[in-house]
Length: 274
Picture 1 (cartoon, rainbow, N blue to C red):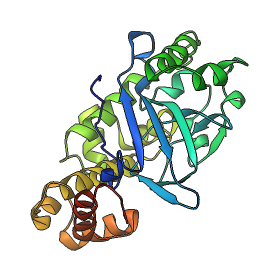
Picture 2 (tube, rainbow, N blue to C red):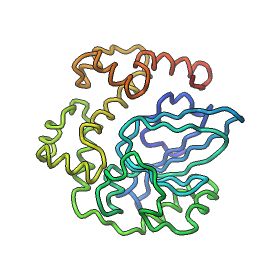
Picture 3 (cartoon, one colour):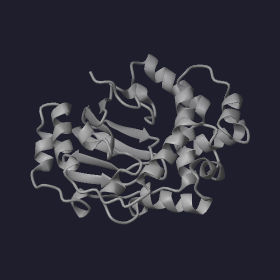
């Protein structure tokens, strides 16, 4: 199998894979590498009456998904993304690069924040696209269909896309970048100009992008075993351990140490999350 970009990063309680659902993540092809960060597929088949709430600490990006009820654009999420899984379904989708969707549309991506809208409201969606993606024999074929369509769309981003994506990449790579003014210095932007850039291209405030990156890192650390949370708090720029705990609890609903214990016990129990 092709290595999955990002592994399971961002997915809370990843031990639910593959017991509750299966996940396939694939890198973009050259045809859409300027737009797409990753192609992904999620498939689940749950017994009647069973509901699994999928929780994701989202990346700063727009997703386009082909689902049983249509083709949807999910805007950048300002909090923890929650979705109840029930019955049986397959979702095939792309997560765009941080400014990838802005390359395809006019106007700021912030207008899509925390919204789910029909893709046809924003893009010229072929009438047979959903059926072709749904009936594709495997994820590779589904990705080829989406690539063929997305690769042929006109690019509309006038300027700033590369700068926005470089700034987001810095945040993801350098955990010491915990303040907007420091990121502005690193990118050569003024603070207000950087904030305007993120509003237009990424759709989320800079401070929120930084926060989400830290939270994803905390969630990853929680899965590694015994963790010195005071040291992690200092490394990630929190004022103290209590600040880290409050931030993670507000986003996830449980303190990081408890999240770690629950995740480890889920893995031991065969992958089911509480």
